[in-house]
Length: 199
Image (cartoon, rainbow, N blue to C red; front, side, top):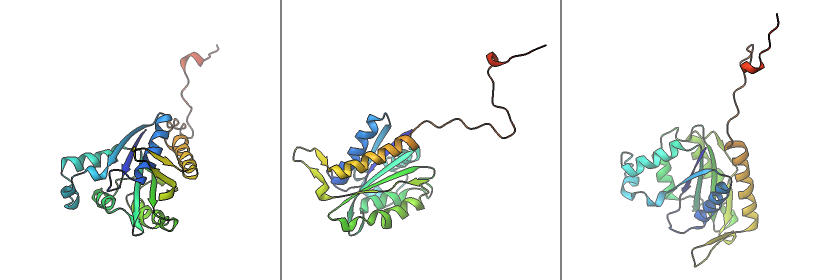
């Protein structure tokens, strides 16, 4: 199973990216294969002109299509997710998230922006056909510390919610699919060594 981590912040260093990094580290410990897409690194003109034929945008769309799980991280501005993330999501095909599990992450200046996950981002993810959207993880600026050295530290409460979300992904979404049950009225295959005959 593959996981695509989408960083939707316009800033090179951000608290939402720090949340994404925390998820990435925990997924790596569980052996998940992750890939990262920083929306801010895509060509701005191609994004604004909705030039889906641009090689970089076509590659980004392929990353989304190839992933089994998508983790989306965004800062909250004006009670909504970032504009650069909106422009990117608007470029995706209508069923871009069909059959996929999505984990939304967001950061904001105060707890009052928490509802942006449910009232702004979640409807867009649903409209793109996401099969299952996990409960979002929201953190205030005070709960995610960025150090001058370039590191970041997530508060204990947020870290626990990230642990729970990654555990859910690992146990219910990223595990290998179980073999399909035998069709009703038919026998399951039997290995030749188990065959017994009598005369």
